[in-house]
Image 1 (cartoon, protein in one colour):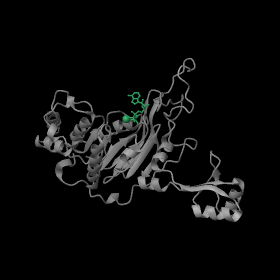
Image 2 (cartoon, protein in one colour):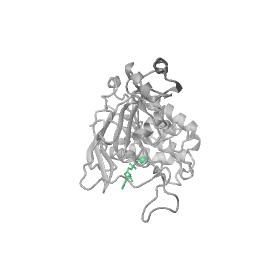
Image 3 (spheres, protein in one colour):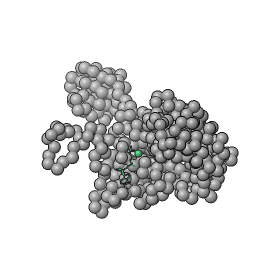
Image 4 (cartoon, protein in one colour):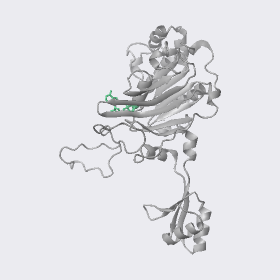
Length: 371
Ligand SMILES: Nc1ncnc2c1ncn2[C@@H]1O[C@H](COP(=O)(O)OP(=O)(O)OP(=O)(O)O)[C@@H](O)[C@H]1O
Ligand SMILES: [Mg+2]
């Protein structure tokens, strides 16, 4: 029997496909009443993690639970978890309504619910049309309708915004926010932070199957300390004067300027004036979220810095197409897949669950009740 909490827990989850370390020691939890974004670049291990969560792939190590139970122990899981892993698998000649009826019958749900969910996802007019003729965005909506059939407490969606038009993305955002606002749980993956930034509260950012950041999106935003970039006539003199004024931490930038963290433009201007250093430019800089996401996750499949010219690949080498889909990460022989290490990037954050979420009373009302 599951605990009805709506909580997803992923603990030390690891998956190797042969030599490929797809997911490495991943731990996070998703609380009810929130939308959690599961973010990472292509090949980071998002789908593999969600497949393990949904009992479709056996972990090499670690575990994942929904409502305190592995997915395969949930009883009638469609009533607890609605999941969309890929918007495929529709019988091409079956109408949208009939597709849903097959699933509804399997879950013991009355047919009338099929039309309800079709209207909910904006496919009411297309109920009689064959799913094989649907556009990508329509297939996404039909897949979501299928996930919603059992009025589940938890939604797990892999790249749900793929193929949706702007109106569809805006609709999805509103829908997921209100779904979570009712005390239910939403976990959505994406390789684009911008796509889900306005939808999510919590974020788990992974790269190469490892956690790079785990916490509230707002905290990630706030963690970005602003800095002032100055172009002085005499950088050394300005750095010395700043230090004397108790403003340490100035570093040279690649283009010959200096960057000073945690100060205001006015402070830098005042120190420079007092020291007799001319400033040819001074401005405050704050890294935006997208840039931060890129910094946290870049490297895995990035195109080479100096890509070889076409026709000049060394013998036996494989070029990386722009944007990159290079070979997956190979674990060295005997290597232990691990989490973060001091050489591998920023320290992953693992704060306790956000305040207030524990006040959730559990899902009320029989539709998605305990199995
Ligand atoms: N069945 C499989 N057999 C072998 N390797 C696999 C298998 N499934 C996934 N992988 C590998 O595991 C790694 C993670 O893949 P995964 O599909 O989980 O990434 P993802 O984060 O979902 O990427 P995307 O954004 O492209 O969907 C990749 O290197 C992939 O090639
Ligand atoms: Mg994927």
